Amino acid sequence: MAGREQADWNFVLHPSEVTILGVGNVILRDEGFGVRVAEYLDAHYTFPGCVQIVDGGTLGIELTQYVTGTKKLLVIDSINGGKVPGTRFAFRNDAVMAHFQEKLSAHEVGIQDVLALLAVTGKKIPEVAVIGAQPYDLEAGVALSDEMLALVPEVAAEGIAILKDWGIEARGKEAAGRMDFQTVAEEEIRKSMA
Image 1 (tube, one colour):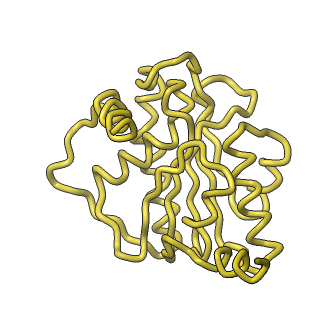
Image 2 (image 1 turned 135 degrees about the horizontal axis):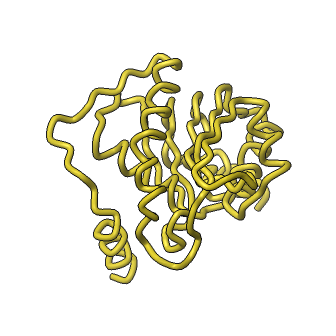
């Protein structure tokens, strides 16, 4: 049995050199900011084949299957840093774990667990960046607040700049239209109920 568990641990479903991971709870308005920014990036940019975009939602340790083996991880999140709503945050490498030890949401605990597990098993991700913003509204609802919605392109541009620092060039899509996040969320709910 122990051998089987070890074999399952080594099985990575989604290996990729670079992972863009949007996290958050999309039914608590601005809590879903990271997922919405990841959706924006996917709708507005084309990335090389070495890049995967993952909707991590509120997954915890299950995220391991998406990030094991990745060399560069960009996490996008709504970050409750106790600051004024809309305050932007950016952490890299060692500062990421320091942040997670101080300010934890449920999904940040999951990310912290994944990064710690990979480090102790010798599979540490060499480059990690976390970007996001302090939420305005955490009430139930699938649409971002207007203020948080206005930050989506700005944080996406920050993510593109980090990727460029890592040698990853993204190309803008010519026909990228404005995303209706409520329609996207409703479609995802319909899929999950099918």
